[in-house]
View 1 (cartoon, rainbow, N blue to C red):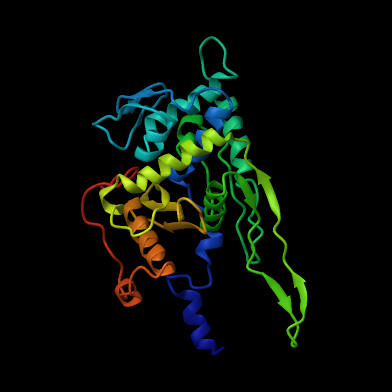
View 2 (cartoon, one colour):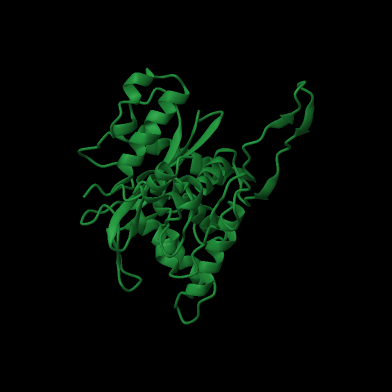
Length: 318
């Protein structure tokens, strides 16, 4: 490579040698709420049909945590609706209830809540790299603040490729596979030298009924949101807007398609992308491209799309 050109690449502000998909770590935001859903139900602190009354601000912790809808409120929501609406209050409450399993005198034990969340995060593959044959940063499961951690904040930090494995695990109802770029290796004559076999990292402990509730909530997130209603394929998704002090929030989306018989899992993150609406725009274009639902010239325009109004479930658009 020409030395001058190499120097330009090294100093380019877009960091072309830095693979954001596998190396950049940020909080997962509300995409993480599926972990909390499984932890809450399987540990017995919430049932699938039980409702929690969202008042818009969760005041059982200090400082209080505002739901994204504040100063509004979601009111009474069950698990599927909480996933659909991405109700922070609901998942904050589940996080605190997990802590109650080890608390005394009516006080929630933060360490217990964190440990319970970490137990299920590990089942979803967040305890290790994905196995993909590229440089990959080590994920970090949150070890502080049960209520914020339960909605994907705390000090949770994952790469986009790790969120993609998480999305695939949700899509197939609980089998977490290592990722690979290799199908098989052949020699020059076409003879197969090595064929890659699937490697299971872990299995998520959850009932069929719970998986049905989770899938329904994610499917309703797509169906009931005005922005997504024109997508030409039935699918499931979860948005996320991850906050980081001092910089614009990160925009995230995970999902899978088709809904009834998943073939692909997808994870999108736009660093400092402000709102999950922008990640959703990207995900939507990717789905349309993969399934040939729109001409590629209408999707690849050479400039970014901008979402200019309204709200997408789980996203603040301020």
